[in-house]
Length: 595
Image (tube, rainbow, N blue to C red):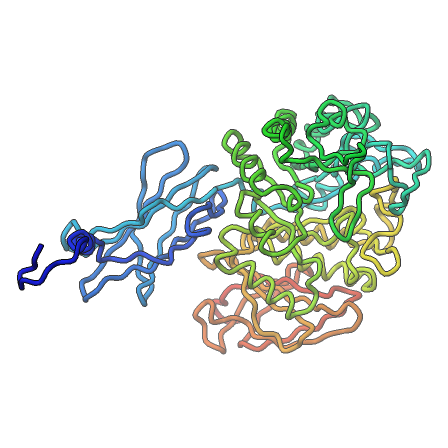
């Protein structure tokens, strides 16, 4: 074949030429939110806006127009809204999902008044998994039911937990989280302080799941039967509390599955089985299943899925998953998708203290919430850098940080030496940096006794019963109650997405703010990170966020103390007395009229 000039056209050139002539002139790139280039869904919450941005451009100078198109789950009806140019080829629009489930969106662009064949859209829809409000905003309280008896030495019951519910709700908590509530193995049972030798009356670790009484779908007989558990769920609902339970994929050596399904485990040649580890921790009382044993596929996978289904049928809608990073990622992707396709209201919290990439991957695969490294971020620089990462795309598109101030496994070094002020500092940070925070019981009493040189509690409740005086002197119940009230009353604090750090002229003072999109709720938080010494700081009030000049005026409410006053000008000052209150929470708005 020859060209018009008589030169021979190389084979394949016509196809390449046709492809070039048919290629779209308008480019749509750098679309957010997008997870792994659209391979996985971003995360959203019912009633909260989804902001979509994209780079949209074309050669030449013809004016462009664009729109955002979306539709919700279970419908083919599309909705659309015009996108607005932000400058430098960046465009934005938003939509607000009204129901849970998977939403799809696309971006379409064209030349204004131009040829219809110049219309361009993304080659594939992008996805957003929209979940209920509790996926992004909740206050969690963790307790061991067996420790709720009033009498020393008596094993607590679900009815004892019911008696605690009014106090938990009065503190402002939304979710009551229970560690495993199943029968506990007797073989290789752990004793007090993780001893390898248990005494006859030691209750064992609830994470050693399974005994003669049953496995993952059974209840520990000393806690009560299913009727008692249902009473607890009903009483919690009456108090406005949701009950979350642990889904721990592990077995004691007495779990029925080792007898009924030995093919689901990996056995040594001598007939023994290796105990579980999560370095540096060793769990001699626990063994793991083998997801890829020949006869475990798919039977084990389905059995674990059915455990979750069983508890959903019993009334559970939130599962905290123990150490998901030690189980196969394909399993979690399949399980969560399978469960949420039938029950989109179900939430999974990932307890994975692991490497960042693996922690993030679990979130991408469907975990609604994730534990974080917050526990080990204490300095101003550490907190600023870490939370800037968590609240910046792409991480913010898929990762919801759940800030636990302590856990039964983690007694942070900071709390071991900081006294009551340190507990107030960590509570204030957790309650205001994210929409999700939680504590393990005893935190409100400032419990900090530790095994020497370790981030573990002395006389850990994982291995023994504990009775507490809930009105012990020095508790911080009033401050926790106030923090939770402030969170409920201020929408700006119900998500981490709007977090911004501002300048405080003291390395011991963290100064940050959150706002609603319309700026009708604007919260500023100042926290002294020093639990031992009085700190003072000047800081910059972000008047510019409202378009005010440096000599502008804010109406201010300090919400912990109930103070009201005005700030005149950008530079202000605050003094922090740690044994009184080492933080302040301000609600601000532009002042109108004379003081």
